[in-house]
Image (cartoon, rainbow, N blue to C red):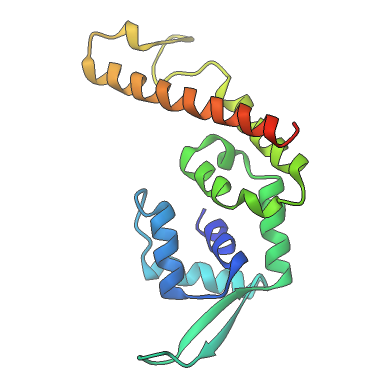
Length: 175
């Protein structure tokens, strides 16, 4: 997810590491904060793979800083990841938000955008629950516990909202 976010934020403009970390933290930081010890090895790995370049530029007030930008290979890699996101990027809500943050980069390919949205729609319309009795998914009404009822109530409201948005967006894109 970190590499995906790095590629996504650098798609629009070159950034230095500090700005990149702030943007990633705004998107994913509520999940887990992004430490320098995590970010910079990921940047180095992407640079070593030829997906981004680093250029030393003078700082405005402080020492010189490295500006990061995507290479053509990096742009192609991000677009490929957006067209065919790994299953976890469709089923995991936090990874899904990363996909949504950058899916607009497929703006010249609404069919690809629709295909990704349909994968999420298919996932969300499968019977599922947080808890099961054998193979039977349990619902909020199956619990006397107000906290588990709250879990189901919030999850249901969120899912309904997302399902409505997915269907509306797929229709708007001509899917």
